[in-house]
Amino acid sequence: MTMTEPVHRGSCLCGGVRYETTAPLQAASHCHCSMCRKAHGAAFGSYASVRREHHRFVLGQALVRTYQSSAQVTRTFCSVCGSPLLWHSEGAAGHALRHAAPKTHLRGLQSPLGGDWGWLSARAAGVGDMAVRDLVDQDLPQVYALLVAHGWSHRLGTLSKFEALVAASQCNLVALHGDEVVGYARAITDGLSNGYLSMLVVAPAFRGQGLGRALVQQALAKAPAATWVLRAGRPGASEFFARMGFAPSAIAMERTRST
Image 1 (cartoon, one colour):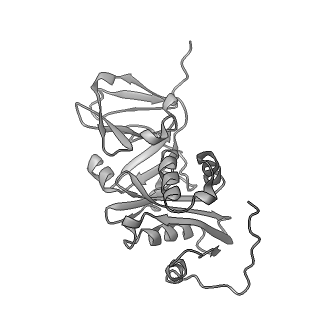
Image 2 (cartoon, helix red, strand yellow):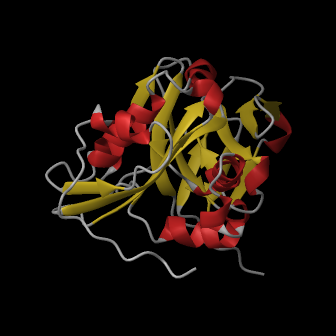
Image 3 (cartoon, helix red, strand yellow):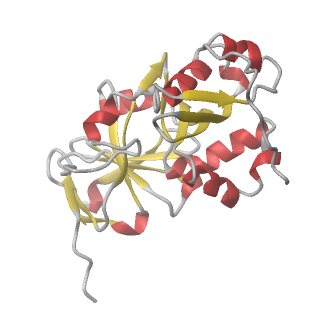
């Protein structure tokens, strides 16, 4: 059988481990959470995603070691030089791997925000030991569980329906504490004139630390000149959004969903 030609090649620092991907990398991101900073010994970890079946080790697989850094995430590294290689989420089996990608050529890789890799780094936000970034596929099970646990099940339906909502939205952001998703925001916007902030949730244990504000600010940055609207029906929502510059409208109307 003929093997698919590699799209990207990479290796660890010592060269003992080499790998290839056989599909384009997706969802470039920089994560500033405390776990990624410690794992990389840097201000952030840089990643891109690829489905499991499109990744293969071509040299030194016996040198590869794993470390489960949380209940959801397993990190992979070279046992000789310590280079981070990739990580995957157990909750997203079959969806994606996220490459630390030392020596991987990423020129032209598009970020989920549009634009190139460098532009994405300016969109990363941090709050203490927590970080806000764009959602990637492996976040979906955690985000869905967070929403269901905090009163959004009537809006979501099944996980498959939620995945469709995410795919149809121009803005999906997650707040992370280590590898744990503790906040989520979803918005719809044309990027120029109008925006609708549809969902905002932060786990109770992490409220009052600026995560909700960081999620909203990063969502609004998708269309900074637009008029943004939202529904503030939950307790405390009106006061929270008023502090961020929102005000009741005398002209807005709505036609509610039928189901």
